[in-house]
Amino acid sequence: MDRKKYEIEINSAKSLEQLNELEIKYLGRNGEINKLLSTIKDIPDEEKREYGQKVNLLKTEIKKYIEIKKLIVSKQKSEVFFDKTMPGKAYPKGSLHIVSLAIEEITKIFEKIGFIRVSYPEVDWEYGAFESLNMPSGHPARDDVETSFIDVPAHSTLGKMVLTPHTSNGQNREMKRVKVPPIRMINISKCYRPNWDPTHTPMFYQFEGLCVDKNITIANLKGTLDYFAEKYFGIGTKTRLRPHHFQFTEPSFEVDISCNNCQGTGIIGHPQGGQNQKGHPKGVRCKVCKSGWLELGGTGMVHPNVLKEGGISSAEFSGWAFGFGIERVIMMKYGLDDIRNYYSGDIRFLEQF
Ligand code: DAH
Image (cartoon, rainbow, N blue to C red):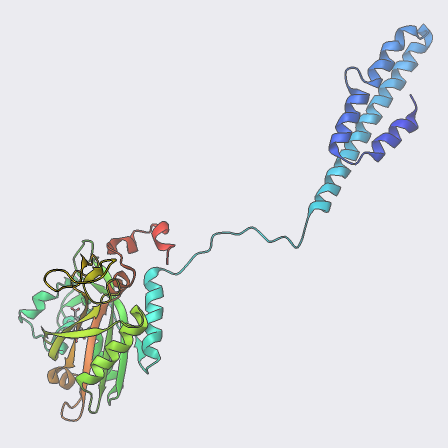
């Protein structure tokens, strides 16, 4: 066999497929090497040995040659196909938790109008959670705020240790920190109450607003609530105050916001519009709110006793406060119905936000 011929052929092969074909052509069962070996019977006896050795040597050479060329071709192939400009593999990105996002958003809304974000302890004494808020021990209003107590000896003046049941515990601390108003506080923190149902988890977040200055009135409170409602829930969202009772505010209110699903009407309009026989707009009752309004949380004008306990003269200063649940406002904004999903760790739920 012509050595040059196989050298040239193997060398000029450009793909693994071509090399595989050459491998069959030379080394296969009906290949050229076997053909050479089959002619050994026609070789004179004294030359047979030498002939056999030569063919076997050739076989090893061709094998090696093809092997090396295969390596070269596969290497060249990967070099040719490596495109440095191709975009990399996209790995799934993590994202902030729905509650962290809301905390960021709410903080920004209040910072824009001069409020300062603070964070006060989640583990506090009864004094911070109750006494300083005009809720003396034994007062029945304390029962409204179910509380988890910590099993350690009580403090001689501050009372038992508690997992704070509301962010109102920041009010007295903030008054004592600032000393002389103005105070514009937004306190966002974890709170704890022993409840577990579609609208309550034992750990949840609240945000507490506190504004104390000269001549602060309910008008300032209403204006701030309207501002927050429009920024967080969307343009056109209205607020209303309903009389209520809290120990730490006088007067006290519950705040509602107008439902964005039905534009505060409580009715999802009939496609043809018009009125029914009773003169009410035609349509079906809104499933989100049923009445046109959704309850946001508690608020009111800071009670003089609370100002006094914080070292602030109620003759000179007045203020308002509110406390709303973060999970609750998220629920209202997105129309969610089970707060427990927030903490289920189910990525399919969390990825949506
Ligand atoms: N602390 C109350 C609660 O958790 C909410 C609240 C009501 C806070 C009225 C306030 C307020 O600051 O003025 O139920």
